[in-house]
Length: 350
Image (cartoon, rainbow, N blue to C red; front, side, top):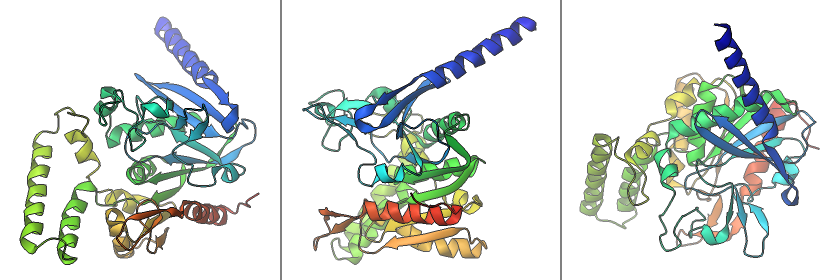
C-alpha cells in the first residue's frame, strides 16, 4: 500500500513539474506557449501576453472547425496568430489572459506552405484534404470538451489566473465546445456563444435547401430531393457511427457529435451567456429563436446580440451574398463582448 501511495505521489509531482515547466515564450508575438499531458494526449495552447505574475480574469477561446494551426509562419519567417488575428487581442490582453488551445495532433506552429486554401494543416501539398489521421480520429465534440476541461484544471493552479473570472468563448464549432464545457464545469463565470448553431449541423442542411426554394434558387421538387438526400446521408451517419474518417472527410462520430443539439445545455447554464451572430448566417439563424426557448424556461441570464447584415465570420456581404473581405466587424464584435464582460464583472478596461 505504501509503495502505491509513493508511486502515486511521484506521478503527481512529475505531472505538476511537467505542466509548470513545459512553457516557453515566443517573444515576437508576446505569447507564452504551454504543453500539458492529459492521459495519452499532449495538449498545446498559448497565452497572449508574457505576464505570468499578475492575476487576471481569463478568456479561453475555443476555435472553430478544421485543422487550423494557432500560429502560421510565412515564407519570410514572420509569425502570426491565425485564430484570433481578426480582433484586437493585444489590447484585450492588457486586462484579460487570453488562452487558445491547439487542435489535437496539429502542430502549434506551421509553415504556410503546409496549409491548404482554408489555412488548415495538411500532410501532402498535392492533396487539399490530407489532414493528419490522428487529428481526424479524435475530431469530435467530446474530445474538445475533455481537452478544454484539462486546460481549465491547469489554469486553476496558476497564480496569474483570477479563479473567479474564467470565461469560455467559442466561435462556430467552438461555440458548441464552449457551451458544453460551461454546462459541465462549475468554475466558469461567463459564456460567449458566437455564430453557433444551437440545433447542430445536420438540421441546417435541411433549412438551407428549403431556403433555396423560398428564394427561387431551387424548384420545390429540387429542394425536396436535396432534403431527402440529407435524410439518407444522416441515416448512413447514424448507422455507421464507428466508421473511421475516409479521404479527409469528417467521420460519422464527428458529424453526429456536432449535430447533436446544444440547446439543452444552454438551457441548463445559469451563469451569464452572451450570444452574438450575423443575421446573414444560415448556420446560426436559430439564435433568433433562443429568446423563445429561454423565456419559456424563465431564463434571464443572457444577452442576445444579432449583427444585422453580417455573415458567419462577421463580414458584410455584397449584393450577391458573398462576403466582402474588406469589411470585417470581428473587432467590433469582440470589443462589444469585452465591454459586456467588464460591465457584469465591474472591471475597468485599462
